[in-house]
Amino acid sequence: MQRIESVVLYYFTGTGNALKAARWICDEAGRRGLSWELHAIDRELRPDASVLSAHTLAGFLYPTHGFNAAPAMLKFIARFPRARGVPAFLLNTRAGGKFFRWVTPGLSGLAQLLPMLLLLMKGFSLCGGLPLDMPSNWVSLHPAYGRRWIEFIVTRCEGVTRKFTGEILAGKRRFGKALASLPVDLAISPIAVLYYLIGRFCLAKTFIYSHNCTMCGICERNCPVGAITIRNGRPYWSFRCESCMRCIANCPEKAVQACHSFLAIIVAVAQVPFTLMIVRELPLLGPLNYPFVRTLVNGYCTLAVTFALYAVLQRLLLFRPVNLFFTYTSLTRYWGTYRAPGITMNDYRTDSLSRRHDTAAPPGVRRNGDHSNR
Ligand SMILES: Cc1cc2nc3c(=O)[nH]c(=O)nc-3n(C[C@H](O)[C@H](O)[C@H](O)COP(=O)(O)O)c2cc1C
Ligand code: SF4
Ligand code: SF4
Image (tube, rainbow, N blue to C red; front, side, top):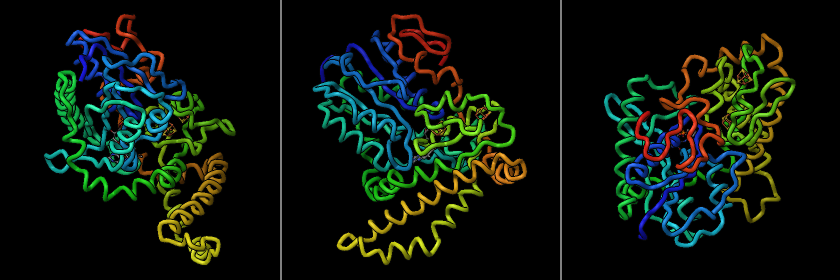
């Protein structure tokens, strides 16, 4: 690998884990006297290869969603111009779990493999891949972890990330951790595909506002993919939502909930015999009448019904008793939320993060060589 003179990182984050990892890497680069740039991927950022060269290390950091790279990152890499010979690495943050006193690893599935393939097709020269087991932020699935446990996992991940960065910057190639779980990752890849094609759209339709929403618009302004629109004066989650958990973690009124009773309705709808019957009997499928295709068609039928029911639900939520019912049957109301330690709302803003090392960094963003405020 050529001598590295600067580091350019592109990250997508929901609740700050990928951003924390990106900052540790910038810090390591700064310690070695290298310049760095940090770019948040959101609705504003356009891929630009002009800052990259054979002496620039490019890094792509993102959360794992449904055994995939976050869709925003996949789209960003897919749109990236060709960058021949530019060294690049991938870092996917995953759900580090808790089993008594042990940290359990998350599952990458295709989260490393697919972006690796895309980067190779773009001409990048891959030099590393790191799955990083940060605290899980999937609070619509499980209760948020306690502070002490979160601190423990984050400190552990900081050490792993700094070591990985040092090795990459020293010119070594590091794929061991990314490829260690390859058999499992390939085994769950069909689930990853189904999540990408169907599951994520269903999950996006489980978010609701509760009766204490003050219509401040913070969730709308801070959604990284512009998935929230205001309808009837209230937030509405469109199909663009990636379930990154940012809105649920940052609502000042704790008014965003993942609505488990509505999820139960969707699951019931998925069982509705007419959906299954339509597909089984569908003569149009003809030679394509395979289980995977039937699952897809079933999934999209269910999705269509889900979208329609969600539009109705949003209207009904304007009535206080209905809103109270769905709010109090949302487990997230009792489970708490997750945001990476030390990450505040301001840190998400693109304009505060896309900085060259030699410009003044705003509060919360460290300059090249400034090792304080970890
Ligand atoms: C909708 C959703 C799906 C997720 N899927 C996975 C997964 O398949 N595998 C995994 O290890 N972690 C999964 N996670 C956990 C996140 O990848 C993990 O908490 C990550 O560190 C969050 O990073 P961020 O704070 O930068 O968004 C999922 C989280 C969410 C919200
Ligand atoms: S951030 Fe919370 S209070 Fe503000 S509009 Fe969104 S849901 Fe309502
Ligand atoms: S709507 Fe909320 S969960 Fe969905 S992408 Fe936007 S911030 Fe993330």
